[in-house]
Image (cartoon, rainbow, N blue to C red; front, side):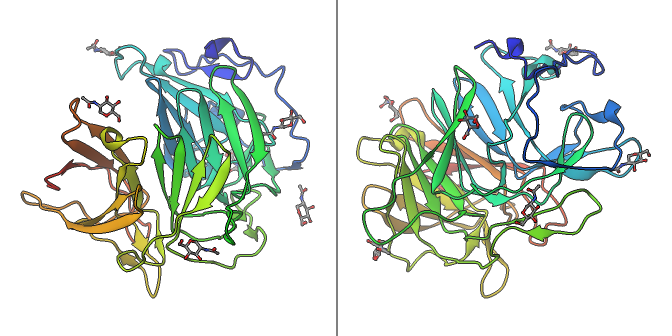
Length: 369
Ligand SMILES: *[C@@H]1O[C@H](CO)[C@@H](O)[C@H](O)[C@H]1NC(C)=O
Ligand SMILES: *[C@@H]1O[C@H](CO)[C@@H](O)[C@H](O)[C@H]1NC(C)=O
Ligand SMILES: *[C@@H]1O[C@H](CO)[C@@H](O)[C@H](O)[C@H]1NC(C)=O
Ligand SMILES: *[C@@H]1O[C@H](CO)[C@@H](O)[C@H](O)[C@H]1NC(C)=O
Ligand SMILES: *[C@@H]1O[C@H](CO)[C@@H](O)[C@H](O)[C@H]1NC(C)=O
Ligand SMILES: *[C@@H]1O[C@H](CO)[C@@H](O)[C@H](O)[C@H]1NC(C)=O
């Protein structure tokens, strides 16, 4: 894969100021309307960001792909504000890396007709990355020329799934086949918890809602709501099978699940993946109704995808349990003999989103400690 030879690739060199900029072939933002508001173009280095919010990650062949959400951007000395992350960012760990080496990261421009969401699903395997659903992003879009542009996304629903072929670097999209029962999978799946069984190539969506999101043309503008902001909350599980490009309704017994959990983590344990199914852990998140209630880390739910059963499981800790949080990173690693598994959680947000965590915890399974 020749990332750095792509005309849309940015490669960061050791000096922060020297970037390979190949703008000549940048596509035109044909559907976008320009807004006049100056930005210091010296700050438009895609790596010159202060942090990311709501971005999602996929690991494939020792490369980490980062998509969606927004980045904190600083215009000169102004206080930072959020802009939509319009890059597919790639961190290369195919060889041992010194984390101070800035060459680890590249950023590929995402074509204008590929949706860029806040809080949808991002799944992937050895060959493909999949972008599913998601609400439109309130953070403004800023072009490399320093222009704020408006976007009217019409395709952000799970009725169409976007995919990225890793080898060719090409994006495409395809309408999905719907469940064979009365259920439909055409909403945004905003704010749900998304699990992925790589062996079976199946993505699992738990709960969330159908909020369409909002857009903002520039950091000073008001919000425009995208479509209806009606919220349909549920605790269904919908499964997307990449082989058949089809959704199915795998709704479960709802006695243990809550109807309105948003932004939890739904993590499949790789060492439990068989041809029939696998075990996943659902943890954290915020229960929106009847009022914002953070899900405690003292308890997790265990999901067995073969039977669609949920089990309640209490956890233990030496001294401190992780604080309740939502929108955090969680990855699972299985021991080489598959007898135990660790879930690593990092970051996340507090109930009122006013603060972020920067701590890391490990949940060991089967001890659930
Ligand atoms: C976006 O959609 C709104 C409402 O349909 C329309 O008024 C506006 O012109 C559109 N903007 C662009 C950039 O297409
Ligand atoms: C960026 O900074 C310049 C210089 O201070 C200022 O004129 C401009 O309004 C700022 N633009 C935004 C979008 O903050
Ligand atoms: C990693 O890179 C930094 C900056 O170049 C250097 O100071 C450090 O010694 C390197 N560490 C190792 C283990 O090579
Ligand atoms: C974007 O538009 C181009 C040109 O019409 C088309 O080839 C491509 O498939 C589209 N991409 C997606 C993701 O729909
Ligand atoms: C989805 O599946 C559940 C469980 O099998 C079932 O009870 C429900 O009726 C289905 N939904 C629709 C709309 O068919
Ligand atoms: C552990 O699980 C993975 C994924 O199912 C499988 O590929 C691997 O062969 C298993 N290892 C052992 C020792 O059973």
